[in-house]
Structures are given as structure tokens and as C-alpha cells.
Length: 112
Image (tube, rainbow, N blue to C red):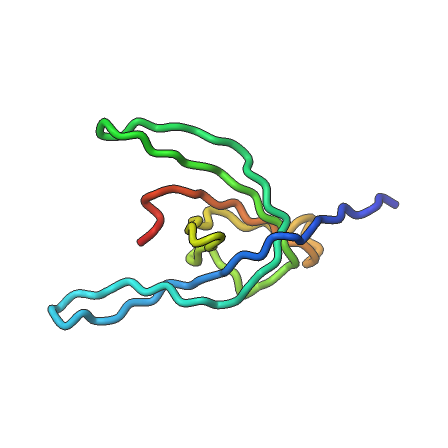
């Protein structure tokens, strides 16, 4: 029988969900509300530099692993050290409902 991998859950992040509120002018304001604090094993997978419209934009692809949690969805975001990360993928590792792998993108355009 193979031994299960363990993770160091030593980084606390905040999970937030998006909602909207009327702005009084017929539009909506996007609000991000805290769902919970979540402990993860955090790793940066790759760094890339993009030149978009003559300005440099840094994007990092990150992998976070935490305890399996069905309340976390792709429509949410992660905030770590006041920096937002867009959730782009969720994986129930080995389909055992023990660990949840989250792929997330860090970048300037995810702040809204």
C-alpha cells in the first residue's frame, strides 16, 4: 500500500466570494466578502513576464494545497498578504476528499 503524501499547511490565506451591490446609478459595484481563513501549502509554479500595451505585467501561477473543502469554488478568489489571486482550477487529489489542490493566478488585473 502506497503512503499518502503530507503537506505543510503553514500559510494562511483568505477565501473570498464575489457579490454585487447597486451603485444608485443603474450599475453595480463588485464586492469581495471574506468566506473564511484557510491554511495551505503554498508554492509558486512559474513566473512569466508579459508586455501588454507597452507596459510590463507580472503574472505568477501558484499551487496551493489545503484540506478538502466543498465550499471553495472557481468563482472565488484567494487573498494573501493583501494580494488577490484568481482561482483557475480545483482538484480533489486522488478523489479521496482529503486534500484540495487550488491553481491560482496572481496579477494586477485580478484586483476587481
